[in-house]
Length: 519
Image (cartoon, rainbow, N blue to C red):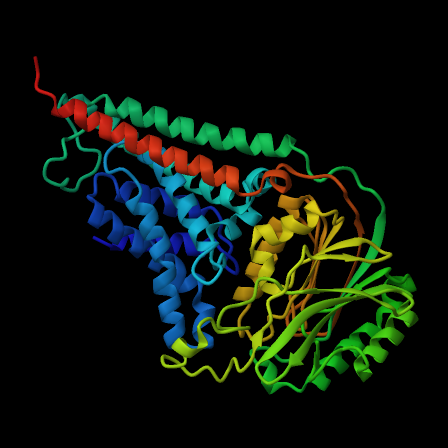
């Protein structure tokens, strides 16, 4: 019973980076839409959980490299979201529209709970490389999730209509699939073929209309100046924790990579230099430290604004994770402290409780939660800053853009991941952020990927993994707002909830009419 659902989930997982076969998401969605037709509530719940297992076992495989037990629990817990989405679909009527809407609500839940959410592994990341990506301008990643499922359900409806039409000449009432229906579920009448045909065609036409509208919608406005940026990657061995590499080694690698900048690209220097997350790891405050003097001297030598990832220990149990901005004269202009921390990576929620369930020695300190809009004002640009994990959350990019950011920067650190799975998903998140906000985006990582992305999602430059590298590009500044920057995810979520409610109302109304005695 669960095999088709697991297969559907696997197809959707393979649409994500690093595999990136984005059309498979539509096939997976179509298979699952076919699978749940007519299922009772408990069966829909089980099918949705099997779908989630198929999606998140490969999609979140990276988690096993940190803690096998914790990774398994994470995968099983994340699979509950599509299970709830499947449960929200009416059993008999409105499936073509209700299923995409329900999966939007399920993804909205994943974005927020538990512990602040985990959008990694989202089907939207796979569509960053596909033709639907432009729709992020209108509704961000949630709209991409809905459109992906709408394509799948539309294809499923057309396929089922074709099967029914093929057997229509028999002149008998036909089941649209060759499997038993639950007791009490009537076989669909012949006119169901035309309903399915109409629903499938309407779903696909709606997707085309949304994509066309997104392409015509505001994309962040005209260019308002150009700056040359350099994303600096010190390089080094991957798959190691921060405790396994001396902070001085990481700092020295960044300085060595930065030293090559004046000779890069014919000697034309950048006006903005971006360093990765936590490449300056300090036992105390940056102020007054030797590292600050080195950074100031580097900014003066380059005569460029700099953004540097800094961590500062605060006592024995806490630390700060910051992006610090310096002027071309070496003055510290401001800092942004990471708001959305990584649960069980940068802090342990309810540490006292979880200490009884697992060894927490790998996370000895908790990051202090930051506040603010992510703005770092520099002479080069007014920067909208997201640190690492935050790039997966659409709201973390929207906030600084609404406060005047004309360029997005992402200091990140994915060095502890052995494979390219997380770095490649992070590039997909970069692309969606750039499209949704209508801004160029610059990311810097110690061992990759470092990249520069345009507002239409094109990757201008990307570093190799593990090697010392500097990605240099000329980027434009923008001041306009996209529809998503104005409205955020709320309109998509509300529309999805309304669609699910309407589908249930139609299903209940049909059953009441069927239950009435004939005159």
